[in-house]
Length: 290
Image (cartoon, rainbow, N blue to C red; front, side, top):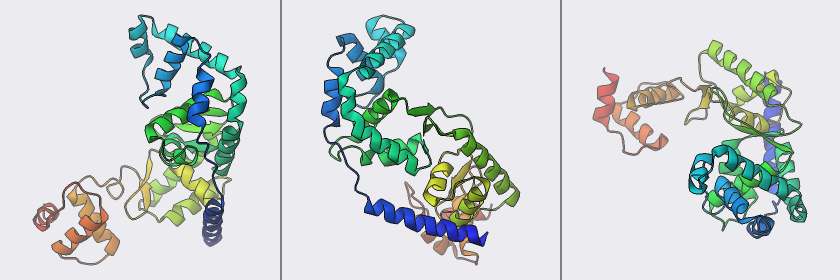
């Protein structure tokens, strides 16, 4: 275990250094390039693509919504969308996106070829678009461009895993199997563990040693979660999914491993958790004596 922890620590430091050293090229002209790319399409095809991906306002329209507008079936809308995308792939303007796609493939390779959709659209999106572009619009552009390139494959969510995007050559099933084995190990352990430990376990269960890649894989799991102290466990455990003041109070007590006055517990709760309303000593007292 110790050697794995040393490796994880070293890889984390190297990844951080590499990230800080790299300058990400943001193509501020992507909105203009997308406009140019779409302009030769027939009006209805252009409108369908724009609404399906939310390219104007960041809000994606369903097949049913667009079908209702044009008084056509959902299947017909889908066909129009597919025809439009086929035409776009033949466009001479597609080559103008080569630098974007090269950087995106590089980004995926940096994360083991796989990235959870929520991380990609919430955290990574700003690396590829100007900071002046609204985030919802940037997400729409990213989704649109990924859908046009054969190297990027979307793997829908299920009850155990979030939606993932992967390079065509990558195999998310290998990541899923490793995470399922990690889930079994956590269940057997029956206690939360520090991030370094869970990464070491996952490294032993997979062929991956890079800490930032292992963290990315962990983010794909719906059944494994982390708490405010950075500890990992099963997502349904009260130490991970603290639903009320009672769970939060017990987590504070467990973390500090010593007797604490109600007021001290409340102070830690209010400092540690992002609460809509502050907790009060009387509330904690009432919950703990139940």
